Image (cartoon, rainbow, N blue to C red):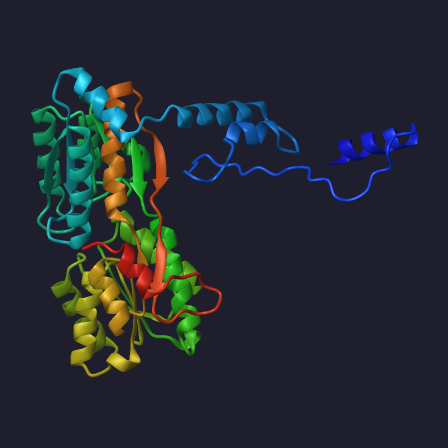
Length: 386
């Protein structure tokens, strides 16, 4: 703008045309993830043409990222490349359980991606959400079967690490899905919801929706200490609500193992200890439904708000009928399909995945509140799983 302005003024002084009207100096959309139908430029272009102090190292990274994006193969191209290998490509998916609709949808996404790519998918799961022993056995079996990569939803973020390290020593790529390992870099990469943000959203919602938030009596129905996904979701909820674990407002903390029956028992125990509870955080929607049953049996359903995380179809139904006030919706099919495609890309190119990929989260509620971004139940139904 400025250089063009100076040039125009100089030209006018030298006898040129006096400028009038509007001159468009241009605008460009910059993204690392272009989409069909929207004109855009890559991050390399953006950094080359940005204003402010430039860092040569950042420019190099931007150009590398732009080159990598341009070099990404389509599913069809990857399938053809895998066929050209002339050997079976095997990947594995290990979930916490096989009955939770979240993990059912994850398996569907992984299988669909594997079918499209022409690769073999092995699956396994634990018997309950914190069943580390079954996951250890599953990893050992999959490595013995010759997998090139494993997608893993860790049941115990810390206890599984030695087995992950062993698998990686055998040349197997391990991508954590949904739940990070502890430490996070124990796996090659993480594809997951931002679980902390998922918690923040329901915490902010609860605070804005409660009539007297500073007088709320709160129960936390989660998982055992040390399970990363609960620490993130619960920590986010507390952050969003504006309190911490030392708050006098928290009167009951119970382990549900993410199970509906145990969620009911946990809520019954909480109500016995403190019948004044009027706000409940739950680790997932099965636990939320168990909590609601206990609340309904105690004849206090109209007085208690439940917030949760998952966004499954049954959970969205719970939002519609009022059992759940709000839930943070995540996208397990996306996690798993991206995971399978990434493992396939590794087999083809030899480039191992690294870092964290955010697969998205959206607050779903039938009763939106000012200041908290959310979508309605129609959006939730259109994007739910189960």
